[in-house]
Length: 338
Figure 1 (tube, rainbow, N blue to C red):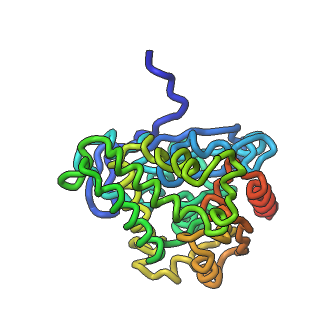
Figure 2 (figure 1 turned 135 degrees about the vertical axis):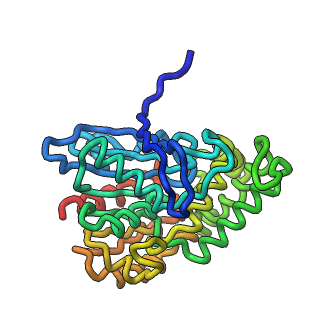
């Protein structure tokens, strides 16, 4: 018996991508939580992060939580190439190059065509989700009232790009990678990718102070094996490469509206902006958000609140980390009061 699907599909039809390539019958998987108010003014958009599906991030949606479904109508759109929305794993090869701008264009159609939504109370995103929140605020400034960018940035920094080159190199060194794509599951590649990621995602202090022991791991090797060696094996390797490409080419100004003018793109933002980097995040560095903050000249408000945590990039997704969760919840509550 086939398991019942708990999400919906928005059939966007044939779409011309930012690259000029036509993508036939593109599909956006999404899930909703809560009830849309009669005025349609209680909408929170919560885009997914790297390799994540809505199952992985919906833990943040809970009554009384940071994203409260008893007050808000919350929509999680699954980013292209995550295995649920159109992805290499479920589409005809070759898979066309997709960008954040393409993703936001289809998400916008979902909101306006399926739900007739014209205002977003909040766009909340972590990591690649945070980059999408930034893209939303820049490209639809009159629609986005608030945006929370958690461990994200307006463009992929060179250092961030290099980190991802290491991830790609580890994954594609597997013999399953042939002629530009994976022909079978790269078991060794997934493990190598996890080991590379483990060094970048968490901080120096996390390892120095053996914080991993708090989660019940008995040794450093036990932590690496159980927390990282198979983390990415649950996903299709070709999907992961496609999402890395979206990430590396992320830049809110890289579209016709801004023609690469980064300052103009940031100046287009009118929303209340909360930049919440991880204080010890190694690849979405606090300094990138500090630089962006001074360029948000037309935002209704723009504040920077680094998460004071040794959990590195994972501070922004504190599934089993109550202290960082409390911090994030408090800052989102402040933002929603504006």
